[in-house]
Amino acid sequence: MAITVTLGDAYCWSKMYKPGEAKDGCMLNGKLYPFGNIERTDDCYSCGCSERLMECCSLFHMPIAYDNKKCKVVFNKERCDYDVVQKKDPSKMCPVYARVG
Image: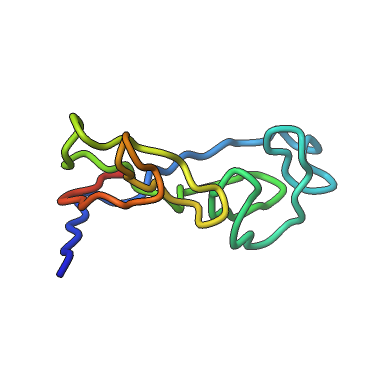
């Protein structure tokens, strides 16, 4: 049985817009997102977009407690999270004891 303990909330940030700057939506890494709630961006964030502000929080959590001698961390963009896999056989997962993000 695996137990995951989250030591913090998601990493969040915000960007304020000048009047008229976000007239068509919010821009994030070259992509224009519509006003309103954005469940998942291409970069694995959940965001809120308005004419005045874009606020985003990560959907992923970084593993911090695992066997780093036998295992490595790989970002899984499809799941928007980090996998911890064996260095010798990346098809096998490693146990993770704590994550932050």
